[in-house]
Length: 114
Length: 115
Image 1 (cartoon, chains in turn blue, orange):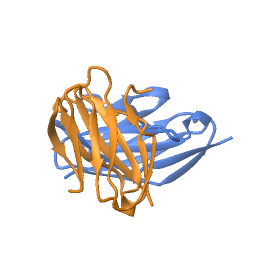
Image 2 (cartoon, rainbow over the protein chains, first blue to last red):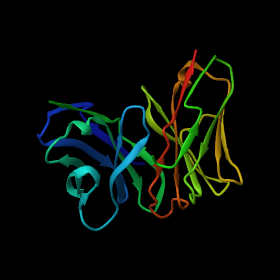
Image 3 (cartoon, chains in turn yellow, red):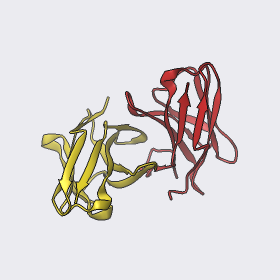
Image 4 (spheres, rainbow over the protein chains, first blue to last red):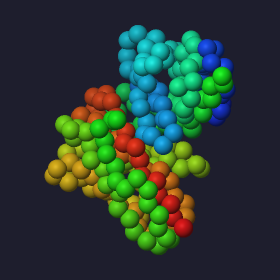
């Protein structure tokens, strides 16, 4: 069975500072990994996903994530935070070859301070 | 706007009642997925339908059932409701059955409150 752990349920950064949201996964087979963002009163929007190949994945809105198999991590970063980045971020995993069931982490609420 | 629509937006009902949540997938998508988001359980996958047939099942209670109709819209039926069923219910859709890595597009959700 696969699982996802997001470290830090709340993260605060200043506008213009680096954003780092942590995600570690557990999977017995090569995983597919995702980051979703949820703005208030909205559904989830896909930021980026890792399948195979290049371990550094670029997503929308300037976000990127790096798959590190040795550390079983898939941390999300953005060089410079913007006020509009304030939202809840979810890391998710699914097993390669079976993309039907996403297993989500508990989420990280990002606050961007002016 | 993801193209996935869900109705109603909000639903308030009493314990023991039954409700139906509706989802229309994006045009051209054949799969519909249902998820439950609650404070204590987080985001959990419930069930997936592909072209009218059930394809995957997650942590869905026996009191809950779903179906996908010929026009591809889906309904999630929740019966004998309990206080703990209060949650945000999301529908997502994707083009394929999930065997390939299709992106799941999420609707805005239905907020269910059980009093």
